[in-house]
Length: 429
Image 1 (tube, rainbow, N blue to C red):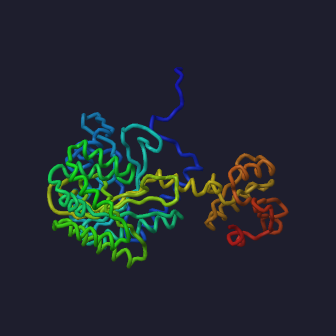
Image 2 (cartoon, one colour):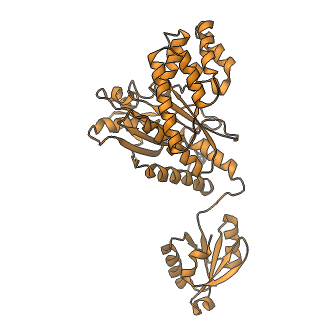
Image 3 (cartoon, rainbow, N blue to C red):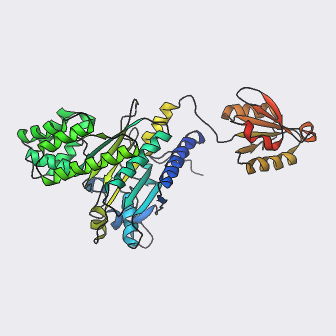
């Protein structure tokens, strides 16, 4: 038999229970909060038609280079999905009579055949929440409110940075940039990560005039309180589109204040995707080693209609990045790592049949219960519980059964109690 090396495909990973528990916590947090706002789950196939994923108004030329392509036995061109937005657009196009607004969330893995490096993999998860069918800025505020609640629930302190693509276009008009606007926006998108000098140099390399670059810098360097920033920008911008962007940001800011959370107006924020048409947002952790955005999104009022070739489907949404979120949780909880979901380990002492019945009863009480399957004795079972951090064990011997009780041990304190079965839930933390 030929020998082979046991290893994962490049850019993929296994998640052992220790990591899987944290991942499930993030997934459950997203799901609960999405549903609290009335968003329902959507699932789409892992494999899509290649012509759908490569459509002109889908992901753009850079992403197309990273598609995992294949053919089925009938010769049909297929591919693995690279994001969750394009499949959602497909669903809306295939189901034009969906009640509006269509509020969906989707938490699934995606694949991109790109370079593998620290923090970047070929298989990774996304958590998206979107609303289709309204241009109301209240929808954008709702998306940001969801975002705020997710990170607050996870105990992560974040800054929610917000801008508007119409305002960016107004800035470019003010600067005298009439052509190659997307090239300028792609350069501006690097300001937060690389600084002003890098943006200046790149714009010069792309052929923009120094006066144009100077005018761009004059506006995007405006800092201060949200309303002051908008007032200064509005006084400099002359185009109707730019002023409309300011107006939308004012309205959005008002809704966010009404909902009780803060955003940061940052008129240098660009987000490099061409399909954005209104507010754009990125979320960053405060006081963390994780410097990349943990969530990002915006309004894309024209994308779905152009994608399916008919109608108007205004939409807005955000995508949560699992990997940076999990890195932040690891950083925060270094000393509190869980290795198992088990709450109680049942140790039978020559009482296996009764212990099986009691384990079933504990699960019926909603307690995550494990029973010794190896018959390894008290000492080895206690070592097992300690190695996984199982917080409680129950000893079930003939003496305990005679009294219609079990012995509960708190593995952290070592204290033991004789309890009736119904008393256990209120005695475990």
